[in-house]
Length: 365
Ligand SMILES: Nc1ncnc2c1ncn2[C@@H]1O[C@H](COP(=O)(O)OP(=O)(O)OP(=O)(O)O)[C@@H](O)[C@H]1O
Ligand SMILES: [Mg+2]
Image (cartoon, rainbow, N blue to C red):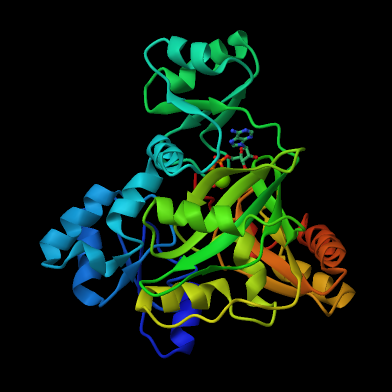
């Protein structure tokens, strides 16, 4: 979707991904290679004036090495490689936030037998893989010492941290952009997660924009960032984590009538002026992979037949796995939330259980 925004402005794009036939490769030039491989990344550095990410798991060390191999300065990548390095390690990210006075749960590394974490935090606590977590993979809750021991299979290998469990009232998120000249944000949105996967996004009456912009300053971030927060019963806002890229909580901006997060992303990468984001209140429901998917086109037809006012976005991912983000539905206006939920239901019902050529192709593991 960032490529689509860039192409509208006449830019040529090249993507690197680990598999063929990705959504990006369907619309622009692409190469296939490991996102950890400096040589594969160097190819992008050699071919492109500017480089950006839609995935925070490209190791900072590989990017530095790639820049060296290509004879480029690492600062032609946005977000900066140091920012990325801080964000890639959830513990380092928390430390940066604490240092800058951004409120959030206390976090400690899990040492050899876990005693430090238990003594410092007590229960319930949240265990997280420091590196590589997404959609809740790498996040576990331990409510008792017994749970903690049961989860040893994960944390005993090292690279895990523990943090205070936050009994939040709701989760909220803010998209923040920052260039050398400007910092600003999109409105605060509520994000509902089901099974740790973002499910529904709609406007929210609390305001986390100040905290979100400070969080981006704390990691010296430039570019576009999704800042995820918790709001407690008392109305306190705590930082959960930052994503250094366009974010699911900003997908509604494709249809809200104002500038989209993807255009802001591209403008921030180019260092171009960005207008204050403004649009009609809008909501988004994710389309997640279902068991036994049929022809997704039936879902598209059904959702739009039921409500012509919604907008269906389908990413063109080859394999549909249960829970995988395959697309989303946006709607605008006062009933946007109800509309996207209803349209998604219609989509799912028509999609499930109908044989389609895609559902018969081999699945990725
Ligand atoms: N400290 C906490 N207290 C309570 N719930 C938490 C805490 N940390 C995470 N969670 C829950 O787990 C979900 C996933 O956690 P987190 O955002 O850290 O992981 P992730 O897998 O990197 O996320 P994402 O889905 O954004 O890629 C959160 O959205 C929230 O619902
Ligand atoms: Mg998260």
